[in-house]
Structures are given as structure tokens and as C-alpha cells.
Picture 1: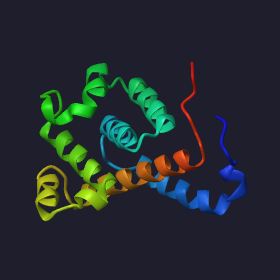
Picture 2: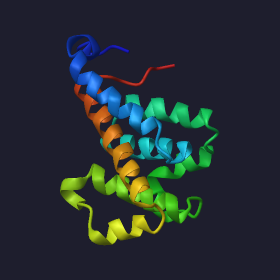
Picture 3: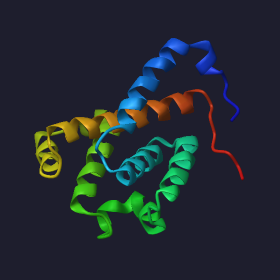
Length: 147
């Protein structure tokens, strides 16, 4: 990876905070496959090729179907995703584009049909974390590795 700045070296305290949040996200009860799909979808929206590449590979290792990954940008128009997954994707999209969409009470209630309070917080943290990584990667000039 060819970063503009070695941010782990230049600002270790800042990255320590991000890594602590990452540790929490990794331990959540949210299904690992769903977490990767959320990370892919958010990275698509944000245009982060580095994170998109990383999380596509992670999803492949978890045996997420190629069809699901390929249809993720049109998740609303397909029946291959569960209603629970769709609720998580809608929350992810609204949070990622929060200045445009916000998170309405309707959306909160919709997500809460499938996720309890703790799981809702965990979903929010997963979405916050990938948005943080996307923004850091884009600002630092990270690009997907060409194979």
C-alpha cells in the first residue's frame, strides 16, 4: 500500500483510538457475513476502493455468495437478502449519507423489528467504524492493490 502518510507512525494515539473501536466491532454479536456485506456496501457508497477490495476478500473467505456481493448495490430490488439484512443495509445507507437521509424514527423502528437494543448499537458501531476507515483511507490516498 502506498499511503500519502504513514498515519500509524505519525499519529499513533489517534490510530490507537480507532483500533480500540475496531476491537469492539470485531467482537459484536452481529453476524460476520453481514458485517462484511455492510462494510462492502458502505465502501461502495463512499467510493473507497481500498476498503471495498479488503472487505470483498474477507467476505469471500467467509463464503459469502458471489451473487450477494454482486447484487449488493441493488439490494432493494432483489429477494436474495433477508428482511433483517435489508434493514441493516438501509440503516447503513442512511447513516453513511446522514446529511441527506438522517435516521428517522420509522427506520429505527424498522431495524428494531430484527435487532434488540444492544444489537442496534452494535450495528451503528459497525457502520461508524467502516465510515471512519473509508474516510481515512480516501484522505490518505490508499488504493486497492492491483493483482
